Amino acid sequence: MEIRWFRSHYTRPVYLYKEGKDLYGETISKYVERTKLLKEAIGEGKVTLRILNVSADDDGQYHCLFKDGDVFEEAIAEVKVSATSLEIQILIHPPNTKGLLVECNSEGWFPQPQMEWRDSRGEIIPPSSKSHSQDGNKLFNMKMSLLLRDNSHGNITCYLRNPVTGQEERTSIVLSDKLFPWDSVWILILVAILAVLLFFIMMPSVELQQREQRKCCDWNSPCLIGIGIVFSSMCVIIGLTITLHHRNRGFFQI
Image 1 (cartoon, helix red, strand yellow):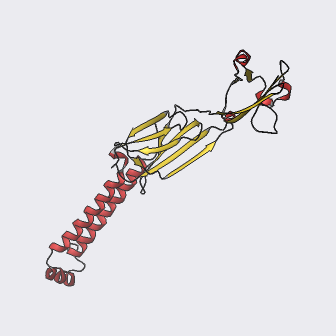
Image 2 (image 1 turned 90 degrees about the vertical axis):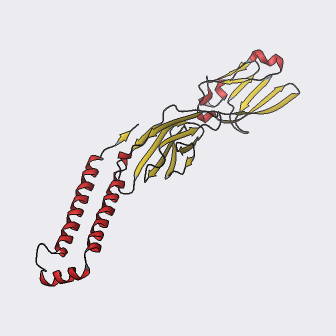
Image 3 (image 1 turned 180 degrees about the vertical axis):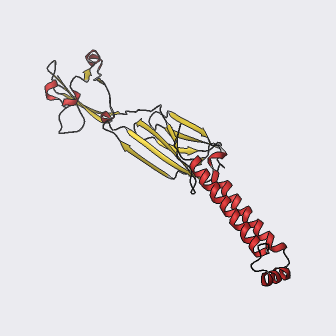
């Protein structure tokens, strides 16, 4: 009697049982001492092979060849390997003029999982970027980023799902309005511009022309006052921008 398990035709077997012996010397080296035939089930017409210390490399089809005298049978079995990571890391980069960059990382998945950003209502948020790599054990390391320009999504969730087992893992983060300082800066700029425009609109045009002709060098002239207001507003805005930049320098990790 001969029992042969192999990955594909014309290759060395994963396991070979012949004439009552386990012939490990003729099998693929990485399967030596990792395979075991359940011999007690042979009498029931079952040829069951157990693989120990399963890795992602063991995923795929296996062929079984059974031969006993004139009896010859072949079957195909599908092995589905899965691995799910329990660790999901969310990183928050320092905010800048483009917005707030949030990054999600998770390692040790197999096969490649479904990965999404979701808002507080459970709706999918399109990612800014998504990438993956595989380590030496063929496990998937996932990375996904999201550029937020405001806090309209409330809390956001990094969601991953194993397509084989259906197991889901997720990590959420609540974003504070303090992480979006540039909104305040643009509001201040708009207020400053509106204040200057309002100043000139309310000033009678005739009086403005007369004072410009007679007191072009007078420090109390509307022209110089307006320039002073604009200059002061810009100084305040620049100072606030620099302060917010230094205050938000750093790297947040969850």
